[in-house]
Amino acid sequence: MKERKTLEEMSSDAALQNASDGIKCPKCECRDFRTYGGSNGTTSRFRYKECRHCLHRVLTASKTTERIIRDVSFSVDDDECGGESVLRMLG
Image (cartoon, rainbow, N blue to C red; front, top):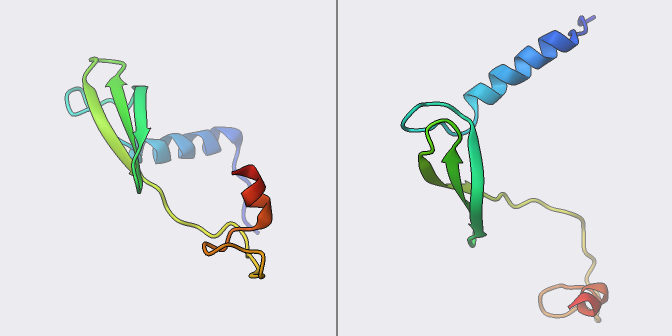
């Protein structure tokens, strides 16, 4: 049976994982950013970020991934895009 990790071990693992992920400041190489703006693109989310250490500013892009939310059944009431009557009421 696998031993359970302590909270300290889990915290350490999370810190190591977060340190390897994400972006690094090109000037001071820290990973502490403040987001001060953003916009949605067609397939990406753009964010303006500022390093909290050296105040260097960068523009980042993160891709959105498509995923299935739920099955949608086809009926005569559906429009051409496959939307349901509930969605028509919201629009």
